[in-house]
Length: 164
Image (cartoon, rainbow, N blue to C red):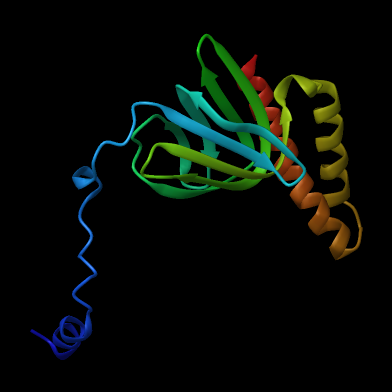
């Protein structure tokens, strides 16, 4: 046993138990409770849903009750909430999703808009404008802003195409 391992065992307080695997945790609930908030609006508060599908930086995810606890960074894309016989979709530009051990899901998004609010023509126009700025002699600051716009418009265009 090396010195660091012996020291850690010697100074670790007895009241702190070593954490086990997620499968060792007791089953909390068969229902997924969703809290979905924006800085200026609460979209869902303690709402029971069947499933939430989201776009995270580690990949697209489907979250059900008793999901392994995790924290995911959201990337621009669709957030789909399946509740009863109804499915609602939003385009989310970014944020975080926190899956808790008690089957609650907290989504804190920067921006979120119902997917049906977007016009494919307006999205294409915005993407074309961003690409035009990127190909021009614009300032570096304008190009950085255009690059962000390009990424969001591409994700939005892909999201609208998937929902059709």
